[in-house]
Amino acid sequence: MENNTNHEIPISGILYKWFLINVTDPDKVYTVSYELDKTIGFVTGIALDSNRERLLVQRGSQRIEINRQEIVPEGFLSKRLFHLPSMEAHKRFLRRGGKIPVGNGIVKVEYKDTSDTLAPFEPYWILVTLDCILKDN
Image 1 (cartoon, rainbow, N blue to C red):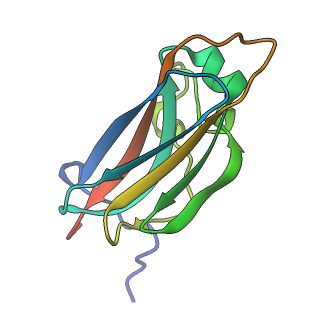
Image 2: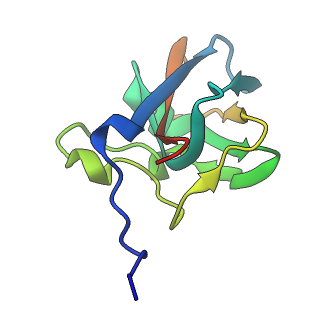
């Protein structure tokens, strides 16, 4: 019997999708919905980056859902989704232990900026990156 628990995906079946959230005002919730391409079947990881990393780490939290399924709960600290570039590439993503079906293809992020005396506010952006697998892989 063949063991399918360690199924390898050909590199041609892996795709990264990303979108930006512009944080223009302090102490505000920013809600962004993004529709994935119809060719994407699963999301396997989520990562955050920013042009102002300190603000992301000190001030940010979020809730993320894919296909109306909560993947990251409200209040989840951004520093748990952010990794320094020196970290190995395959370890930069939050992995939820498998493939998350894309379903309707809608990814919704509610990002919350919260005041922190150690990180005074200035406008910044958040880059949400999804590690995806194409359908039929």
